[in-house]
Structure formats: structure tokens, C-alpha cells
Amino acid sequence: MTRTPVRLHVNIDHVATLRNARGTPYPDPVEAATVCLGAGADGITAHLREDRRHILDDDVFRLRRASTRTLNLEMAATDEMVRIALEVRPDVVTLVPERREERTTEGGLDVRGGGDALGARIGRLVAAGIKVSLFIAPDEADVEASARTGARQIELHTGEYCHAYAAAAHVDAEVERLSRGAARGHALGLEVAAGHGLTRGNVGRVVRIPEIVELNIGHALIADAVFLSLAGAVKAMRQAMLEGAP
Image (cartoon, rainbow, N blue to C red; front, side, top):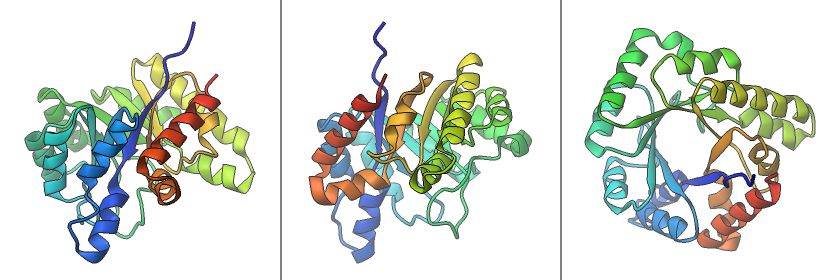
């Protein structure tokens, strides 16, 4: 049986980063989303951070109005962000850890330590008909805790794998860790996505993990766009995923 191709969701945060660096109205992340979808992306991901360092509130509402495919809103598990998500009504909300001093999201959400507050916020989103995904470390205990929250999806943090790949050390161990986490999630009835630090060079081993059905890729793809065009970067990433697939 031929496996269904892994979905590619493009994170457009760094288009907004470039715009905000000069305080101009361009480049517009909504226009970028349109280009990415036209080039074959299956969905768009945007992270509305508490400090608004890249994506802004207005961007999220405009993305919702313009979206023709899946809109995935990444956000911290706070009451403010839940309120915004309930107004925007994205197709998916991915809850992520967030620290103001970090350059990008590092590590997975502390699902086991989230307690009743995390459960209540997930419950509000689920009750509104929004699919909830949790960005977690690929550890079986975190996967099992995620399955108890009512979330429908997990996104496995691939950062450690990407660091290992770049250093050419312990790559097999990190692939095995991702594989175990994905298999456990699938067995528990969770849809399994993955993301963070993925590039055309390292995506192949992740896309071969059979339980992973979606990738969220941002920084490397926007960086490729400098040389390949945005549409070209999406097509090149899609090709790398197809070449890596079993």
C-alpha cells in the first residue's frame, strides 16, 4: 500500500520578523501564506507570541479570513491566548512552551506539570470545536500525558534530532527516540506531527517515520526563499520530503 504523503505546513513567522525589523507593511505574512499554499503547502502555521515579536494580532485575523486550507495557530497555554483563539477560530491550536528570553521555542510543553489549568484551557478549545495539538518532547511519558488531556494531536519536537544531525553524532538514537514517541502516540489514538529545526538536508529521516503525518517547517524554508523564491522553497522542501519518504 502506498503511504499518504506527509502534510507540509509552512510557518510564516519569519516573514513577519523581517517586516517588523523595519516597521514597514511589507513583506506581508498573509501574502506569504497565499504564495506557500499556491506552491503546494497543505497548511499555514503562525505563532502569536505573548511579546508579539513577529506575528501580530491583526495578522492572525487576516490569515483566518484569507485561509483556504488548514490554519494552525501556535500559542502559549494562557487565558489571553485561549481568548484570542476562540475569536479567531483557527482549524488547529498548537500549545507550545514560551519564554521571553528564548530566540525560538525550545523544548516541549510541560504537559505532566500543567495540571488542571492546562486541562481547562484545552477543554475550552475542544468545546469550541478547535483541534488541539500539543508541542512536546518525543518521550513516551509526555505522549501518554498528552493523550489524557483531550488533545487530538501531538507535535514532536525535532530539535534534538536536528542538533545531532548537524553534529553527525547520536543521530540514530534521536531517530529512535522520535520513532518510539510517534509509535506510542499513534497507539493511543493521537495524530502525530513533528517540527523544529527541520531542513531539506535532515527532513528525510523524519518523514520516513510511518506514524508522522505532518511536518511544520518555518525558519529553514524562509531562509531558502532568499535564494529559491518563496514558492521555490516550498517546492524544494516538498521534493526533499518525497525523496526521503519510504
